Length: 308
Image (cartoon, rainbow, N blue to C red; front, top):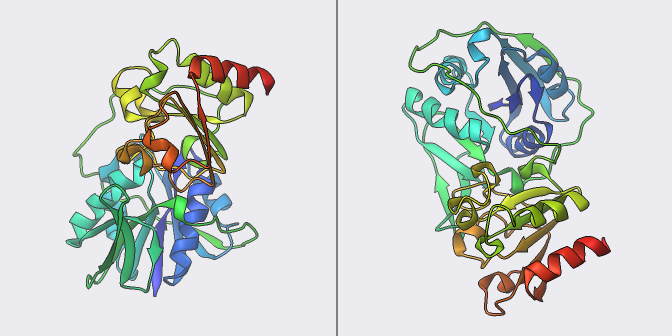
């Protein structure tokens, strides 16, 4: 069997961590061909060729793919689908935008957030905010899926796959780029960071959220937030961790002023070590925390930051 893996490419750069973790999942299904798409994707393709377990890399470079529009990429992938038994991508924002469209074009089901590969037709994925694991068996001729990268180790580097150019597909003309609004940050990317510090509704305001950022910067960590904090305007949407946000599994997760609603736990409970700081000793977050501190965060966090 052959697998087409859609690499995460942003502004010409390969998302090495997410792509390498998706390669680990894809290797269990057959020979892995990686597809890099973008206005500038050759550098990303060369980097993807170094991931162990990749047999070939396809690169589609065209201005059509320069603004991360889902429809042109979906059309390209669907056009390349023949000859592949599986189409896989890491469960990133881009892939979750593209692969459902690919599945619709191929008239097959979409398997989202796969956490385990049982065999070529059978997969596991979480449901009910991660409280149950669903086993899905697909009889589709082509399986289209996103994989939850937090559930897989990254494939090592050291490969030497060939790189081959493919022609750009047609433009479906269903969408157009208007503008980008990107927040610049020197912090690690949230889904691949080794340490994450998250704040919740208990932080109280957007201004007070600065104490979360200061602690994160001291730890060289990414900053996260609960949905309650995001909905209250304390933090931007792309910091949201949880069922409707990003799924993370860092070595250390520090939850500050987060009660621990089931939707938030679904996005971080696979973290290796969880530390919770909350003044409510009955908060559900303490049920999953490895270390818990019952304290006022406005006292504890600045003190912790100072000692660090």
